[in-house]
Length: 357
Image (cartoon, rainbow, N blue to C red; front, side, top):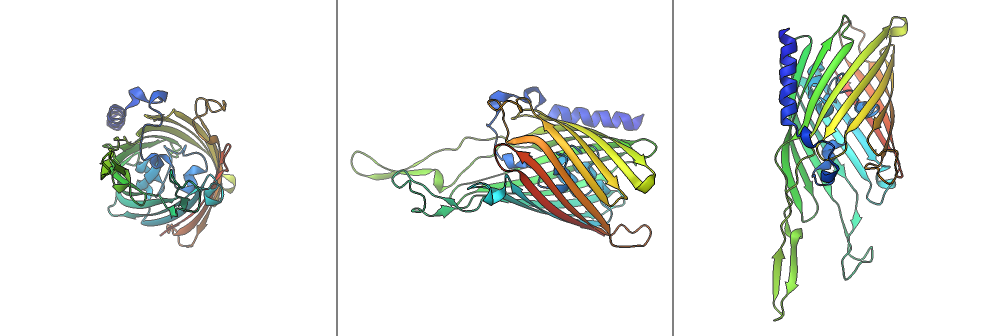
């Protein structure tokens, strides 16, 4: 009973902190900054739309529910590369995302984790009012980066929680912005075989960001022919806060160590439309996993009202390769691939690998 009361207390706190009263408000759509914080850079969880709020495990949990970081064994390292909407070959300013992370168990019940997500857009042509031709003014390369430091703790065998502190930077050659935010999450596991899981996480809660730099200045000439500089002010922009709630259930089959997981999640966005996600994951021999998901958003089926390029369909596959035959030794390598469909853009491909020992 005490554990249940603790869960409801944490849920209440997270709900109060999140701006849920304005969630899904179309009038605020597009007014946030650092929207890259909503892009899941990890391959395994994007394969079913990040629906695994309740059952995400290991290093990748630092994105959608940091509580799952508490399940890291000893050490886990991971890398993922995402070609967003076809990457640089898909758009003139297509984005590629590189992510590297590490999780280390530092206490019997505590795990420290960190990861860096770097987002690049390639070289983009500079155009000016007096010389709008492409190729005559050189290029520039915007870059986004966020650094995340996390800690997760297992309070009991059923209750796990954690928090993330993140530093965000966005920059071009002469304009930049920086800020920081906080994530927090909990997971509750129950059932004879831990088959029922519940999770909730609050993401990107923090102060506003603001751009600054010489790129916001303008050289002008007054009526007397004197040159002077006008400095414009950038408006403040809030972080894309969201509240995630998820539920999952595992069905186990003795033959060939099969497992089928059904998961559902709801995302309450403060500056975007809310998302509803359903997903399935099938595991065979604890080696091969196949997964698929669908993310629904109001207006998704109406081209004139759609607020996202993603059309909701996603799928992925993983191969867990054990590297030790010793009983109780969890050393292994995991290879992941995922695909997210987008209309009218090209789909998003992601590949990743993790090593645990």
